Image 1 (cartoon, rainbow, N blue to C red):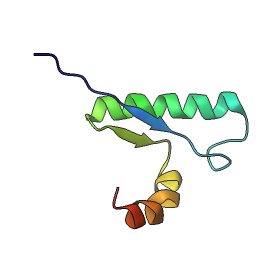
Image 2: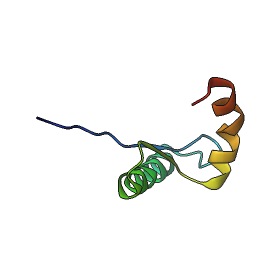
Image 3: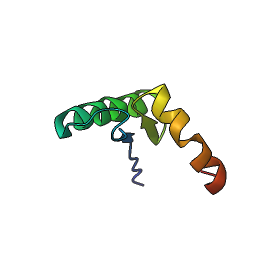
Length: 61
């Protein structure tokens, strides 16, 4: 039996940066945090998490 998992890191423009390289770096770090914590998705910062909180409530994510 095979088991697969995926981890996603999220960075939000312009909250986490305005340059592509900066956003990619922060999203990459968030992805490794997700892997380390054993969760499917991690955001790059507390500010990003707070910014998405109302969206998650509306969509029950």
